[in-house]
Length: 116
Image (cartoon, rainbow, N blue to C red; front, side, top):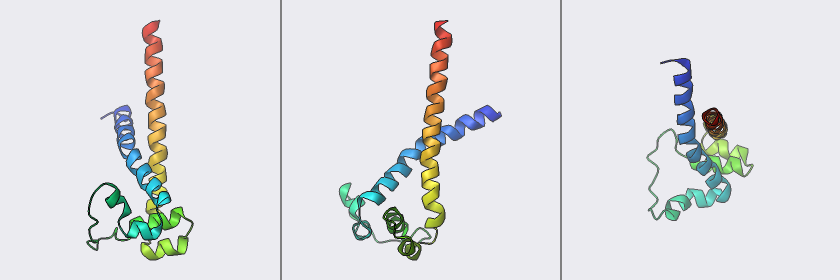
């Protein structure tokens, strides 16, 4: 795999993950910590909220929501990994936007070359 092929593959992955990260960030801003803990996103989708299985991500939705509302100490109490996950979500959104701009620029250049 060439460097260009690897970079293209990474951009495609960023484009695929960016909407999911953006949805998580938007949901964390729209709902309160209490609503998120009560399963508001699941109910919005018509699903029944399920109890947490007790994995390493337990409390991450509430932690994301707490950070989005500026409640950093509360976020750390829900899940300390939010220190890594929240910035990573913003990074994925940024990488997706960068990839989108990159592909749009390449398409525009290809159209210009085809015209000439």
